[in-house]
Image 1 (cartoon, helix red, strand yellow):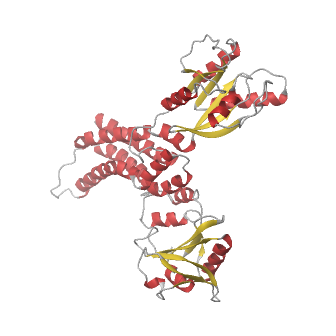
Image 2: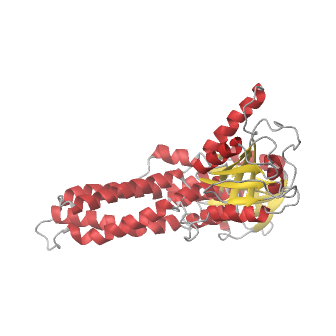
Length: 452
């Protein structure tokens, strides 16, 4: 991987600053041919990580920009190779012209995530940390960003380091006794490792338990607002968002399709879905909307069952509450408490909150109830699993360790226990990148944007 790659790292929009990154064996040669410091000293002679002011010129000597440049030599750079950054004015035309000059001098266009991929391949970061880079970029709330930064700093790797070390000790001790029987090596007794394996099981189980909440931390919690026509669903959506997103009229069936918007409530990111009113109808378009509403309920992690508080409870209301009770989480929202005292008589295990979308009364109680239903795991930032691949690797390692403990407790021979232990090592190695396949690596970095 000696070729030199380059890319615009700041996108193609007009901006105050535009950054072009280079990495590879010809980085310093290319930079010296393009960038001319006002000091008269070539960038190849400049110290690492120091911003230098100068002119960018094309091959004919025409000045393309007056900007800053910094270099960082491998192996102490981000990628582990010689790297450089040109901090130009953010004109897409200028950035494209500079990139063309770099290509003419022997560089090539970097692929998605190729800078970070080189950092992983060159041992500058583990795979779980590399994946955290794109999670930071994609984060839609501060909790997701903090967790991704923790993983970038190696939180997941540190969490499993002791487990991997124990498994390595088991394997190395067993093979040392087997391969060198005449050496003075302590006898291999698998039960000596029993407590360590059980501690590893508990640690991996606790880590895996964070995934059910962690996967929602990044993508948001699908929350379906459901109810009869004119129950106040769209009004509730608008009130929570703080602006009129959905059309509200007194005509039943106004909402005929699902409407989705994201909303942060406390530390919880919701993907609010306003659905068509659930009822039997002969209108073909409305009927399709009702079918989508029912699918939204089935796929939701949270169902807000909206009941018209100005009317008596109906059989349709009871059906909707029943659907909410079958969801992973549900809340009964009694609407229109500004019109009259709620007229409902229901039996439900779900929290019940009375609100007015007009006056805002009760919205704070609703938001508090939602946050209480979805607490973040009380673990340090970075130790919440949000990545499906990570969860699968931890789950696999946990199964192997449990199989090893079971084999040990049943008195099976040490080689059986060892086979299960080495399976756990393989799974944990896939998480950090020690044993990951090339196709998996390529798929991971395809998620990245160009220039990262």
